[in-house]
Structure formats: structure tokens, C-alpha cells
Image (cartoon, rainbow, N blue to C red; front, side):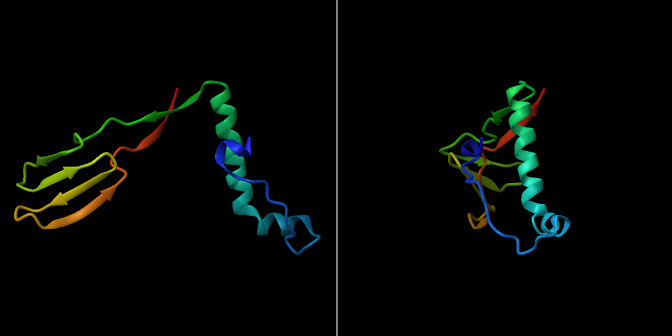
Length: 102
């Protein structure tokens, strides 16, 4: 199951023999592990699937916006330009992935 997430099992000393203290030290890793388990179980039961969102802007084109600014789109980047062509911001990952829960 860990191979699905490209994660290797971690076995290391937390520096304490007291279980409650060890759980507190490893709380974030434990929570992440539980989320992964929940995802795998839900996927196996068919209750969750990974969906690719459609492009908001067609790649390889410059798109004019209502305010006069524009967007240059690639497969994974959006470059926002003002009216004079100056770059306002760059958004990476314009085609996002999200989970659809049924």
C-alpha cells in the first residue's frame, strides 16, 4: 500500500520508551498515515476517484479578459498580463486534480 504513495516504511527511534510521549512526537506522521489508509479503503470501495479538471483556458493561446488584461496558457502554467503586456503573476498547475467523492 505504501508503494501507491511512493512512501517507504519508516522505522526509527523516537527517543522515548513511553508510548504516549512517542505518539505525541509522531502525531503528524500518524495522522498522515491514517489519511492514506482512509483514502485507500475509500478507493477500494469505489467511494472516491481521482478526476482531472478541464482546462479553464485553452493551452497555446492568449486569452483576453473582460478587464483588458490577458492570460497566456500552457498545459501546466497560466501567465497573467496587464494591458501593456507586463507579467502580473504566474500560476503553475492550471490543470488541477481534485477528488470526486460519490
